[in-house]
Length: 173
Length: 444
Image (cartoon, rainbow over all chains, first blue to last red; front, side, top):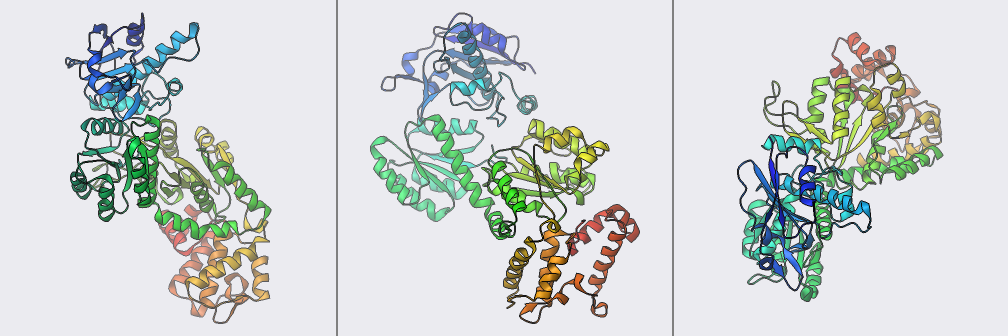
């Protein structure tokens, strides 16, 4: 089973980020493409919190075609109504997900910072895509499906699935 | 994540709060329901047997406080977490006074809410699964801890060091030295203490049966597999798995266990589904595993995997000073159980206890004291109450006593080689193990 991923730039995205994420996706993803999608951030913006409602934003993604999954990339700060922030959101089993790099920026600057950001965004992209294909959180610390609460926690993971999650994906598709 | 999902009910009149929390907790692997009112929540609790409720304090109609009181009547063991806005914290404190587990202020920090619900799930696990285990630990621990010997103090020190970690522990020592008790202490002192403590004696089972016991099986996996069976490894999820007599595990099962330890997943016998498992492994053996590895009877890679931290229990004969303390402890325990008024031991009886080499170690001592309490008709235990202190009264022996004596004799003649003794007795090895267990016979 190969799932093609359309990486969608939602608003301004740093140069090469969408392509880097696309090429960094592990199996079962392959043969995807990068594109842009115009979304109305203002419809989901909550002024008192100065954040964008992730649940509202993901509803602006279209339904994916058969064999495809959609992954939105954004730099806005996402929240869910009950939570102060989230790194991303997905429809469990719905093949749609969004990752925000707003809180994934490394503290250090310099030539390594861009690489760290790409790796973090790619790992969280694999995480949200996993949810979008039906995976839940994993207890294996370096599996992409392990839940991360802070950016450094993302660094402890690899942008790929552990054997159990890989098998679970294969079994369900 | 637990194998049996914890059931969470989110009760809030605001749909977007219900939906976002449901999404969040489903991704964690919980079984989540939502209710828009107190009335709907009560119906859901009655219908689904909810384990954890997240309840908004301010709702039209039945508010969170009133709902909590009614849930308490319906499901006393349910854990209730109150959700509140900053302005209603005082009401949340009132809810705490009335038995809520905790409260959390909206909007939640993702890490805080995940940690809180995980703690609530641990509490649920504690209440429903571990009551019996804790009672058993409380009953059994004094026998080890009351020992005043430096050797046992060192053991306790090692237990305290390793228990808070998730390290695999190998406990070595002769049969009857209390290896399972030490394993229970490790579990009880660890962060997994609210999970299950699951025991499997690997020496008493044939290879196929052991596989099924450890890994579980699917319906139809073999003749007699009439339904799905969860194995001991799955049952130990989020807890501790204690594998006794690990030195007796057949090579194939060693390979399978090694894979589980590396990948933290398993497949039930006859199944294709991969099951995630999260457990701490404690093993024990009376064998010299290094020698077994050198003789190619035990896999080296498996040995290194299980022997990350080793605790060696000294045999009782190397700490004779412990015998009077333990004897007094067991006397008190069994006299209380049997409602007998026995004040202590005669000097001859205590001298016999101290002089005896105790090849069966603490377990043999406990059995000897239990037997003496049964036989004792006076106020003190006498030397004649111990089987090793004088000739048995053979004329009065029951059929089972004769069987026990014969099994002991054959085992001794075969140097406790169980397979050889089973052949001599013309019974199979498993039957002999069962009889040894029945009579409390241990290999020295």
